[in-house]
Amino acid sequence: MKETLIKNVGKNVKPRKPVLVVGLPGIGLVGKLAVEHMVKELKAERIAELYSPHFPHQVIMRKKGTLRMLRNRFYYWKNPKKGESDIIFLVGDVQALTSEAQHEVCGKILDYFIKMRGKRIYTLGGYGVGKMVESPKVFGSATSKELVREMSKKGILFGKANGSIIGAAGLLLGLGHLRGMEGLCIMGETHGGYVDAKCAQSVLKVLSSVVGIKVDLAKLEQRAKESERFMKKMEKEAGKQKELQGMPESGLSYIR
Image 1 (cartoon, rainbow, N blue to C red):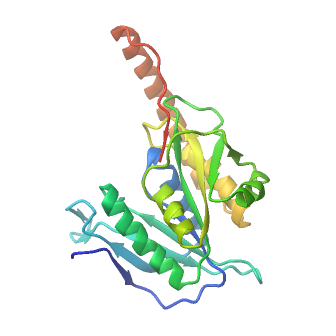
Image 2 (tube, rainbow, N blue to C red):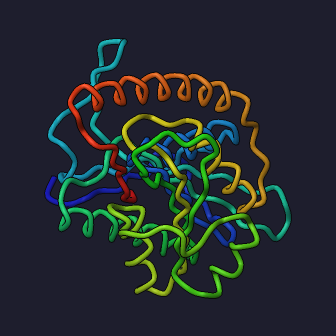
């Protein structure tokens, strides 16, 4: 394999005014948790798989004795509401490893979405602050002032986060904008060092409002509670270690 490949695995679909919702691995696995939960709750249909030579050179062994390649997966959900947008979801195992590779993979994703006549992209991720967050804020960064005004009504905070958006969560929006699309990155405030289902819950609530779809959060809420207990324990232990080593408290602030 010399370049990224998108392989159709389901029926050919003709989505109505599709939006692309992306949740790939990043800080706290926030976007991945949120989008995978929505895919499962909506029973979205898998329609394609993305394979790339830019992914790590390994395969995943399954419990039944088989193996599979690392991949990203596209799902389709048909909106039952007349006139409303259908959704294409993108989730996956990994992201591309280098800057050049990210450009190639994101370009293929955009090519695929353009063929569906898609115009809007939502990417989800975590905004790392390096400390425990009791009530995660949800930040946003959009490709236009018009979209900022529209999404500010959904409880998303704009202009409060700083830094850069690393990986597909940012690059898909930047490259998509150059190709006539509009997009929004939705980021949940998170520690940054642990899997954070609680933050994923906050992001998913906002995403549900943005796309106008109610999703049962019961299972994610339970996972969030378990994650919160784990993170508090780890934060406490990390604090003890810093005290023993005489290290100052310092925060981590970046986006992915």
